[in-house]
Length: 188
Image (spheres, rainbow, N blue to C red):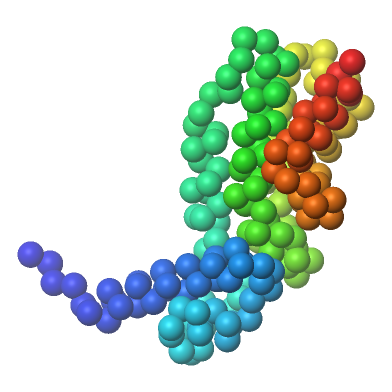
């Protein structure tokens, strides 16, 4: 039987608590929580935060696993519908639900985008993934129509979702309806 060092176990638990504290603060609306706020929420000293994470950038990298836990089940579920139009409407529902769950984390990421190479790269990967998923089921003639595809991509972007929910103060149901109606009008 392998004996586990209590310090190692405690260190792993502290690290987990720090990451969970950051996520909780972000979900509560603190788009840029300080190390002091994180340490207080995690119930650990400030030195412990920086022992596990050399800076806040390193800590923000840990949020990736939280994002992955939200995105992975969505990607693993096939779109429903017999036609590409039905699949598109289902994709809107799925994106909206996913965006709603990711909104606080994504908003915090956007705040730090200008100062973080990692977050910039994540943003590029996220946008490319969304575009790839859209291309995957749209008919070739829609994808080849550059302006139509770019308009669809813009309408179905996270930034559009944030504007509908935050700036325009629409409910989730209303925001979904706006996205669906916009896409329907665009495709006429």
